[in-house]
Amino acid sequence: MKFALNLPQVFSAFVSLAMLLFLASCSSEHSSQAHPQWMSGLIEGHEILTRLSIAPANKALGAEIFPEQPEFGSNAIIRGNVCTDFPEQRLATDPNLLDIYPPSKSVSWSLRGDLADLHFTRPERADSDMDSAFLSCEKSLQRVHVALKIVLESWKNNDRERAFFFIGHTLHTLQDSFSPAHTRRLGGNFHILNDICSYEFTKPGVCRHGFPIDSNDFVDKDDALGTLKPEAEAAVQMSIGYLSVLGAFFKSDSIPINEEKLFSAVNEYFTIYNPTRNAGSGAFACTWLRGK
Image 1 (cartoon, helix red, strand yellow):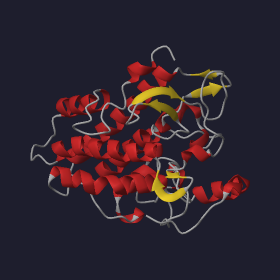
Image 2 (spheres, one colour):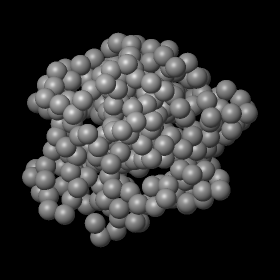
Image 3 (cartoon, rainbow, N blue to C red):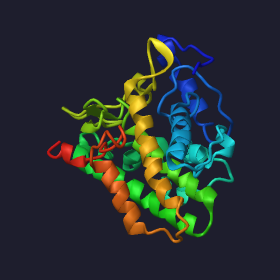
């Protein structure tokens, strides 16, 4: 995959302009840019990771369970993923994330420490006052579980658009966990969580996401634009496996879907490393983070 624009190292000088353009992330079509980030907007990393995941998941399922349209405006999974970064700018026709996460009158969504776990970073309240890595991991997965309940409710009500939107919303959190700007991972498939970073504040011994933009968020290699870095490849594999687990239930004619069995299958995929089944399995075992 090639990108149209080659952004040099002086990219950081354009942070202010970039942030303004990011804010259009849910209100316009996106064009491919060089150095796509996990962050959505001008640099469309999440879109790329999600597009690369949907078709292989459908192939594994033997049916087109998930929409494969590549366009941001016509694919609810991609839209739900992207709008997680800047829901204030979502398309008017999209489900309202702000109904689920009440807005702050003084702080924008992207800077809210209490929502940091949506991006697999540590919830923060003030300098050095932040959650442990273990608690942060638990909170991030709880965000995913809450959104999956909305997915199941929407599917039961035959609202596929809303269901796919919130599947994309969960993918955003899970994909963020593979960004070296958000976490530290170990293992051949990056399946071992070793730390979860802060975003705005600094704490000794805790990795920190560069504020507001971190070059470690790039999904492609510095020396090979258009070639995913290993962490991004791992995020794609995780996304394929995750969608395959969900799709096995959506493929069934049983409505309502058995919620207990679905969550059991998802939790097994998250916590048990089985690379013969999928290289992205076992990537969310918070137990690796106890004491951190």
